[in-house]
Length: 184
Image 1 (tube, rainbow, N blue to C red):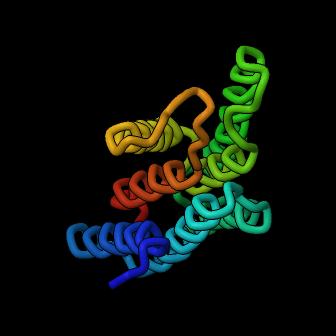
Image 2 (tube, one colour; image 1 turned 180 degrees about the vertical axis):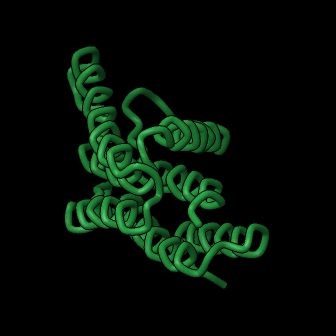
């Protein structure tokens, strides 16, 4: 039996590994893509666990993940490098812009800059055109979490804090794996 405080972590790790194994089995990913997927997945799981527990996405992990994404996209020629640079810039700017708009209306931050760095890392790994898909998955799973919280009796209001990093990580992971068919 897994202790209750470790169950979210175990479920998250199981989800990442299961989707990777299914992707390897179903689409026969090249070996280098499998290794890159393990590196990306490990970073995303670690960031998710830290955000769920501490409420932060630390620079010591988001920034190297961003740099690794730019290097990997260039080294393995996963599309034009400019699209990955623009993805990194676009990911960061998107979250910052959302937060600035939220702050203007609500007079308080609505999303952290760690999330901006994580979406920038996602853009570095996936490219600019993948960011809407990442955000769609992240928002959908975030909304599902809020609905689940409300359904289980947790009070949900405009002041309810939600770790968005795990949702961005999950969106990145799914987009990476489903896009991995073209990464050979």
